[in-house]
Image (tube, rainbow, N blue to C red; front, side, top):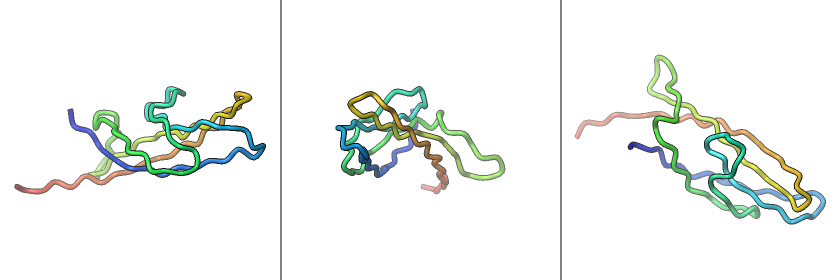
Amino acid sequence: MYKHYLSVYSAAVDPDGDNITCGWDIDLDGNVDYPTICTGEFTNLTIPIADWIEIPDSSGSIRSIAFIVSDEPGLLSQTSLDLQIQTYLTET
């Protein structure tokens, strides 16, 4: 199975000072698939090519993922990120 590998950066802070947990949801099911450190780090994601949507009349594909943050009282915040990649074919 072919996959796209990418690295994303994330960081979050709770305005009330509560402890938080963070992570990436790559299939948009509301669950964290790749936990991350909230104070800031790069996370390597692996997304199967079959999960990307081809952009008509181009060699690009698009995919949405979400960054989820939860604090100790249980409040959630989620931000969506649309990723676009360009596929280049090379001769070997």
